[in-house]
Image (cartoon, rainbow, N blue to C red):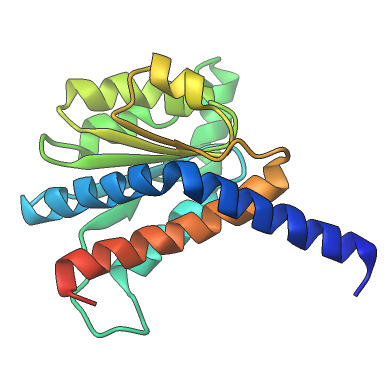
Length: 190
């Protein structure tokens, strides 16, 4: 194995171990909040910033159609990543409003919003107060932006404090799978 691969693996493992040492409790709190949402008849909405749209889709798919385990689908939706909407909003100078209209039309009290973040993206920051107005708690899984989310008054924040976005995205994928496992364990006992 080349030195570059060994170093990448070491960096990945170090970030995973360090972040779980600090954030495992908060990740469990996020899972519990989502379970409470489902048990109360609410839904989970997921919005992602930067290049994390694929991760929102992975999480939504895992909660809707967990193929390894026989269980009911859970009420979850990844918010739209429409290029057309993004282009139109950029042209109008309103890109920060990317998720706000979606939230206003879909979310109701009792739902929950999970934000997947790389860099305190403006559309995600703008979504948070809209969700709060709709009585929708907001949890954030971020690669590195704890302070911005605490200032914005997110309910729960996991920040990986990754040295690079690449390592952060890798570990965020692990967190997403852990979140699914925690939710399934609480709801279905496995």
